[in-house]
Structure formats: C-alpha cells, structure tokens
Length: 286
Ligand code: SIN
View 1 (cartoon, rainbow, N blue to C red):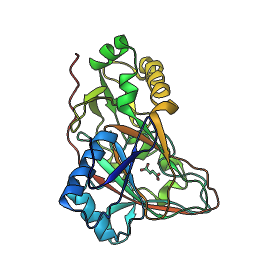
View 2: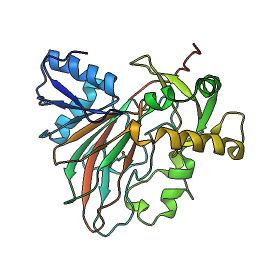
View 3: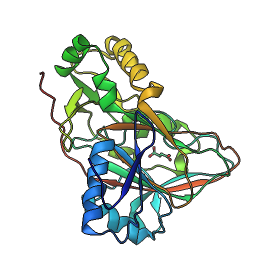
View 4: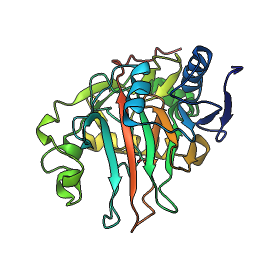
C-alpha cells in the first residue's frame, strides 16, 4: 500500500517494517489509519524514539483493543496492565528466550503485544521475529492441504504451571505467579485465516503447541519439528536492535518472536502490553 503520512521501511525481505515519522501519543487520524495498515501488512512494526509514560503506553494499546492482562507475568508497580519483562545482571535466563507466540494457550489468543524498551544492555538483547504467512506459503502444496484439515492442542501448564519450566527455574519466581491459573488446554486450527489480513498463516509454535488434535505427542513431534525448522528459516525472519524508547508491536497470529539472551551481567527492562484478540478460524482449502 502507498503510505502518505508515515514512512514504512521493510526490515528484511521476510519480516517486519519500521514505521518512521510518528509520535505515538499524537497521531493524526491519517497516521493512525496508516499505522493500522502497516501492522496488518507486515505482521510486526517497529517505532523509534517514543517517549511514553506508562499511561501513554496504555492509552496507545487501548486504541487497538481492550488490554488482555497476562495472568502469569509480574506487572509494573501501579500498572497491572503492563507486564514486566526484566533480566537482572545476576540472572542467567531471560523471558521469551525461544521461538513462541504469546497467549496461544488461550481460547481467544491475544491479537498482539506492544513491547517498549526502558533499559537496555550496552550490546545484545535483540528480538527476532518470524513470518508465519511466509512459513505457510512456502510449504509444498500437498503438506499445505494436509495441514489445512488439522487442529492442534495448545497449553500453558508445562510452562507456567506447578512443576513447569518456570517453576523449576529459580529465576522464575521473581517473574511469574498464578500457577493455578493455567486453565484447560485449547484447540486451534493449524492453518488460520488471519482475522485482519484474510491471509493464511501457520499457527503452531514451539513453546505452547502440545500436539495435533487426535494425535499423540509422540506422533506429532516429527511433523511439528519439521514445521518449526521450516518456519524459523532465516529468509522469513528479521532481527530488531533496540534503543531506549523503541517499540515493537507484533501480531501474535502472524509472527513468532524470540528474545536473544546474549547480555549476561547487564540489565534489560522492557514493558509489555498485550491486546485482546478473537477466536481463530480455520483457513478453507482452495
Ligand atoms: C516476549 O517474549 O514477550 C519478550 C520479548 C523480548 O523481551 O524481546
């Protein structure tokens, strides 16, 4: 699309675009329309040099949809809407250090997450994104047709529940709580019709997808691993280098993300707001 009130520069051939020339707390109507269009077109958009208070961050998020407060993350003091993504100098693990998409364990997964950089290490701490439209479109037609008829089971207990990954990690206690809120596993189509763009996207991810529906975890594993290897090919990804005041806003139904953990001994603090989405519909076979 042709943008007139903002500039939109693709980050790579495979994923993401930077939106330039905007102040998110003072968008004109035209800019707001074009920011929405860029989000739909690129799946993840980036902004630089945004000076936003927590209240302004919340106000921007609410323009998109009601806030979907993450029930597991510790939040910023005084702002339950803002999840804290923090790694302290003495910590070894980070939050989001593997390919995933937020909230796929919910019946109506969050539309997107708006991550604002507050404090950054000297070097490192980039975030990588992968494009799930390209992941689907580049599979062979036979596999596409097979996947279009399938559903997958997603869950959060193995990550956020008692005895899960975060419970076993001594660093997890300062970051997460509410283990009892894991809820029942949910089922989503493996290939969704994206609610905004209408395009087909692959919707499984290494963190929260447990298995294909009516398949055992053991039977599901080889095909899921094949899809994960394929979807994370460098051609479908971009890597965002943060500066203080940078924002990434990603669509959880169109992308995966991965927080690089390569800055030991330094602090990194990000504020994340997740905005509500909808139940996902299966893409119909062509
Ligand atoms: C996340 O996975 O939500 C955090 C990403 C990041 O900190 O870069």
